[in-house]
Image (cartoon, rainbow, N blue to C red):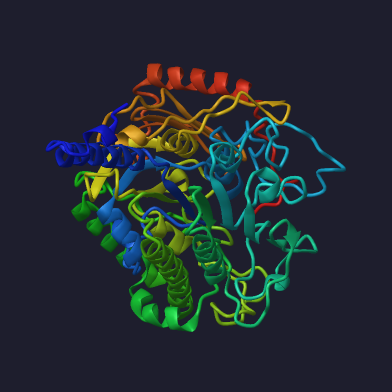
Length: 545
């Protein structure tokens, strides 16, 4: 120990004090540099690969575009093909089947639990990001759509979150939750751990999700704890509900039709470097007529305008969240990740035939419609197929990562292959949290994801040997650039082999030319299927939203 008192007349004292001060400042700086980041995970619902401006769209998404320009965009990031499976993998870092969500949610599971790969709620042999981060000192909040368990003890605050506001169920009326029913049951909305009915006046679900997220940031701005916030928007999932001031921006934009729009997006994506200039644009889906031959053009253009408005409002909300982070001085050390749960949605046919009422203007509270297969084909440019399929159109997601303090290659476009399980692994890595072997007396399934943290720092990482998918009998396995895929939805279930390096649109089946590769991938898939306890016949008993 240095005894300063005995040196009070020393000519060296000022220099010594300066040295001590420098050491202390450096120590503080080192401590600050190792501080756990805040983490914000944002998920869109049913948004296609090319629906953001920074991924080639004409839709105005300046806030997400800014996150991409200041951060990183991934071109080969994959989800699990449908809302419930993707959310289960996102939250737990394991395959959907391991998390009990190989298909969709089920109701009345207390009376008919059926545990296993398709049980319809999160397995207790998994841990959520919130459960793990709480152990590492984080405050964990969620705002938005849950959709991985409709009964207690399977709600967000039962699974680690400190607070929650949002939709426990799936798709809903954006203006009035009580107007949406499925199997005669009203949609479940919750505040905290209790059911809550939002006010009908002045309510719009996208804005409500944003507002709760901002309130959480305000509430925690002076907390010493780091914050993990999961913001799960319902936009742009059907029904087509948007605010008039957003719709008007796009009122005339889509009169050009889906054929011209696909070509415009394809050209922009090539110019941006998101896809190789030699990559073919998949042909228009044969079930979709040319725009010239399409019926009800004016109505169809309006539907796409409403869809665009839904994404526009989502982006506005993300901008408000970013602004609050900056006001609180938290933006620089906040890791923000954005993705979609699956590709664009072709449900309800070519023209987006509504579920209940077909003679009401899209966008309004009484309408309940989707935008249809024609526009979903645009959303998934340049790929084939849609949500539920495991072709690229169903499983390829825009993935944006922003972390100002860490990411140096601003605006980078990464071709590194990533999977939705990797998000949990990445969060564990950057937070210093430990993935448990057991939790609350349950053995925990080993983590399946691989951290992306090295990639964010400009380094290489060891990727997955194989990636696998199964949803409602649609199946795929991928190894590097080779993908073997089979579809039962509108297909015969035959396997096809594609080389994604030069055919990511999956146009040329090479299974006959490369039988040895097809055999290797099929063998790996069968081994995985046994491990996951797959049942490809599972379908109609689930809530299919």
